[in-house]
Length: 296
Image (tube, rainbow, N blue to C red; front, side, top):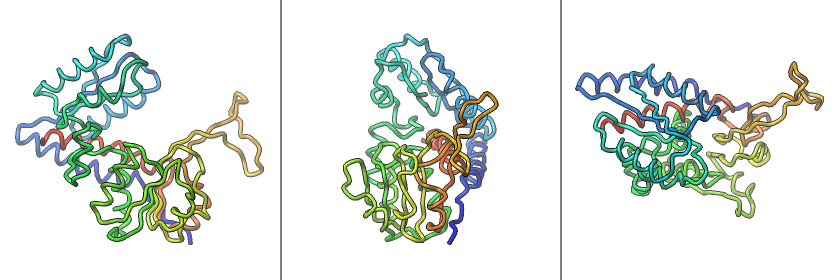
């Protein structure tokens, strides 16, 4: 058996077209979708991501404004700035760019974003709505994972779902979202005694821990759907185990997930590649949340 690849690009393209249509529908009713991004200080590592955000928003008709504050901005001043955007009727959604400077509690600042404008779904109220199955805004990586599972067309009801990783942006919200779809979730973490025992009985396996290759082929139930959320940079080697070098003689790096892809694809029925799986869908789910914020 060789697993079918779940293309994040294909799923993302479909969602993007849906978002584009909703943005136009709102515009015709006199409502503009306006996403405000807040960044503290200059951060070269996030420039590519910011450009991507801006480009994607432009493609679907969402207005995008980047607010860059001085690098020495303190937590109190940052919260005050966010609260100003909360009160601005022209802004329908707010995203806080990471990382923040040392000394600023990201959780506190995130919580200061009003729930109706919290496009990342990280406000405490947004998280609480997940428990009641009433979430309109949920963490983008979690909703992306669920969208990819749905895209396989499998019947989720009653399936054994195992999630490796208990983060607030993936593990916990995926468990709650899938519980609403009547799956039976188990969440594994660093204190789980026998990880393989749980993963081997998973009809659907979602892995998000940031440890390359932690899930081997023999830990996967034959025919399982595997969603690999991990993004890891590791040294690249050729088939003989020799380091692959670039033109400058430095060892090349490659991006891999948390699952041993080559082995897993021979066992699973569906699997997401890394890159090209969860990542593209996560990005468009931010746009979808921005539209939902505008509606709210």
